[in-house]
Image (cartoon, helix red, strand yellow):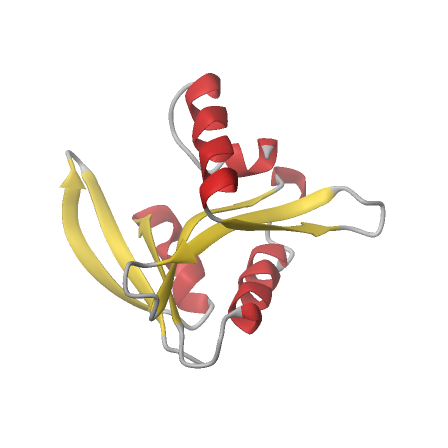
Length: 126
């Protein structure tokens, strides 16, 4: 859960509380290395109509970054979804390229917060 908390902004307590709430209310997965250490974590769940799942948080251990672990845990999540169910995420400009590289279409939502452009990233159902 501590790795998942790094996906959020704010103070340590607020990030931990948000990660705890996600783990309780959504589905979460971890990707472990051969030594058992958590390399990546993701939390997601169905949208209100259940035709799409929303990624609420995705985090990769800093020391393990840029090794494909984020892509791998996202791919595993997609494989667990029922056929016909899509996947989406909302993110900032610094992460939108990751989702695009993973095959998601990306659409700007504009400046959702002052000075922060947000993007909706959508992967078609399998």
